[in-house]
Length: 122
Image (cartoon, rainbow, N blue to C red; front, side):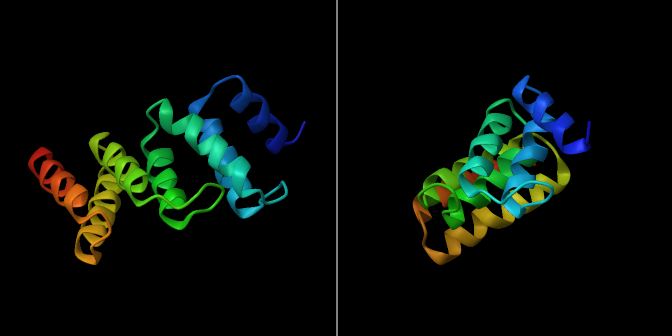
């Protein structure tokens, strides 16, 4: 059994890390055909279990509209959830994306609210 098959089995069994890996594999077509909708599905499964990295990547998916309609509010929601997990890298990337949305006027009010909330938590 190959590594891809093991990841697929573990993802289907609810392993959040495997779901993240499978979502990333689908997003770039590594070891399996690229499929943005499948990437979105598996990243969502992992993110909803609290995986900070999956939450960050799901924010990017919503921001860019890959596999799902583009939605800046949902992107900011997931960037914020990722930042709240306490992972330093995810926190910095999420904080940066929230700030960019604020500066670019994409849901500026929402971004401003979360930018300052996230800053106070840091």
